[in-house]
Amino acid sequence: MLQTVKLLLPALVPSWRFFDVIAPSPRVEFTCLRSATDTPIIWHEFRPRPAQLPIRTLLRRLIWNPGWNDTLFVVSCAERLMDLPTDHSHTQILTRINAEIATKHPNTTHLQFRLVFVSRQGTELRKDITYVSPVHPRPQSPTP
Amino acid sequence: MSFDAALRATEILLALAFLQQSAEHLISRDRMLFAARAALCLMLLTGTQTPWALTGLMALALIMLHRFQGPYNGGSDRMSLLILTCLWLATLLPGQEAKELALGYLALQLLLSYVMSGWVKITNRDWRRGQALRDVFQFSAYPVCENLRRLADRRKLLWTASWAVMLFEILFPVALLSQTALIAALTIATLFHFANACLFGLNRFLWIWLAAYPSILWLQLRVIPV
Image: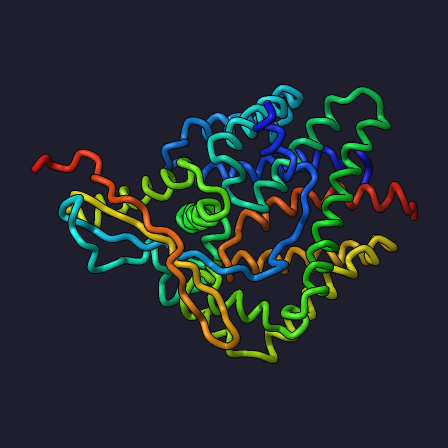
């Protein structure tokens, strides 16, 4: 009950502080591994944005934008993981990376993800790795 | 706009916004939850058993809050829940005064959604210099494609856009003084949400904020009758 009130209250008495401060912005990166002890070499950006989008796609996304909205949810989970770490945020990110790997890197047996926060310091952009997950076996990966 | 017309318009716009949101989830693992929500939205849209439809939508909203441990889509989900709660109370509370209080609260929060957003920006030096909007384009997670990041180099454009947004948001209450001004302000606000939807992919904000507009159109006539 208390948890419900805690979740509900910010909606009923909102602060409406949209973009008040442009905080460091998270990027989720993952690496595909061959074993639990494998060393990560290449980190892939999770769902990188396209170089450009045609206007008709921008207009279509006004009514059909599930992929992008899900990506924004992953951004929220990454921020929550830093502010108030929970298994929920970790699992939500992991589940989505697993789904992506299933199609793009089907032979991967283990994976790891990390959070890179991009911010501006003076006139330069800086990247800080703020979280590195444990190595996770892929679901239903073949037993060695 | 009369109270009853505002209430019905809010029901219809909320149902349409929820149908749009629900459709986006029908390909996810939460499809059953959102299919149920879509069914209740159809009841709301057609005016069938409205109190039950709203109660069902409230129950589902609470389940979803737990499912996603908070809003799935940040501010748009918060506004969704706020509109739904006010509409639910305005429908179920006994007595016209209580009903009007519920819809009036929604109108007040809509007003605050612009004023507070403007206030927190204008009191921030980075926003006043146009730097904050540069940061949004340069490194935030929101621009929908890499090409848009180049806008970060258009300093004058972003300074002008920053001040246009801040002044519009903070001066929004002035529009309450006349119905024509309010309609003009809501039209500009819609264009603002449209731009955010195109540039940052915030499509759900556009539809859900529209659903709150009837409440302020009603409140304006209620408080400042022509």
